[in-house]
Image (cartoon, protein in one colour):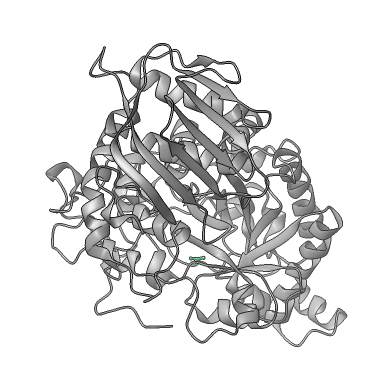
Length: 549
Ligand code: ACM
């Protein structure tokens, strides 16, 4: 593992580093890129990023041109694996198992070129960027290396989403779980239901801090992505070999949709026309009515979603399924009639019936359903996958039952949780999850059978934004912990099963300089800067270590 790599400080650590040294070759205005078929996106990416950072043309070069970055595919390598070698001759060769592997190799090349490679314009004009002498073989531990971003609680403008895709790519993360709908906002344009965004995309005010806080931000908050914005985000992600998992959260977390279309709610229990987009946090009882009308409505939503998120890059569609309170279903004659009609045991089975409906619907259209681990309650079709968030338990049960699983337990990788116990931590919520805690997170729980372990597709960090009002707050919560998470998701677990945090911290010294060059507003190791603090805004810190569930 690359902890002793002088002058390289690669993160995530590669699988193997052979020869290494400071002196490889110096790039200059004559350096070209030779791109074999299938590597054009990496060629474009190298030219736009390294070209801008160093003020170099990086023009296309001929097959045997010296002084070149050569991009090749060798299907004998693992699909996302790559080999990067510099050495004899003035060139660097990146060979990937597929175009994705080539792209991840290019990310390594950028790190090898030093923090200046992460800037958007040269700060040392005329100096020649040095590619160190290196021979690196690398491939990821998990095929699913993700981050979930909640743009419903606080909207993040499109540019910020594109920037996050770049930040994921820089850390070799390849799944962007896009949490597009919730009680507090509907963020995706659906042409056949315009009120979802006209009404559902904004709220008149917002609780400032945790819901126990007495503060309100009286500024109306909102925003949504047009369908063209979504197409651009999807294409931008695809150029970076990032799959997008859109989430339309049903049947709970749906108050914004009900505010837009009151007939979606339990009209026989409450006056749903009185509901507005929710302005505070927590789990509320206003869930979708399990009626045919609701099913048809969300089939219509999903038809547009499938059109916007093509199967090649969005094989999974997330339908939420978490924290659906059943109070209204218990009181609703219509919901109870459904339970009787289908011979269901209770409201949990009614939720399961809704999920099964969309599983069948998505499967018929060549997609796979994924949902939060509550979808296990009441039974789940075999091909559905589970995001295990309430701990390892749901994921273990799902994997042992043969479902694919993404491990994202809130006790470990919820980046909204505070990262230090200090009094100056802004709006502190949840358990203390330090950089080291995240670094030591293990996605495959001990004791899992070998067969079940094969169902752990990978892992993701989740970023819920109730207390993250803008990009700076998101950056603060996400970084540097996402860097540690990226190494968990990509790099092999050492034979000892003990990760070398001291070595990681040494490499972080260089990585902070990369984050500085990128303009990431991370939490400094010494604690929040004055402008990153939020004195007087109440959070809800949980005391003690997180339960080991
Ligand atoms: C969740 O955190 N409610 C999935």
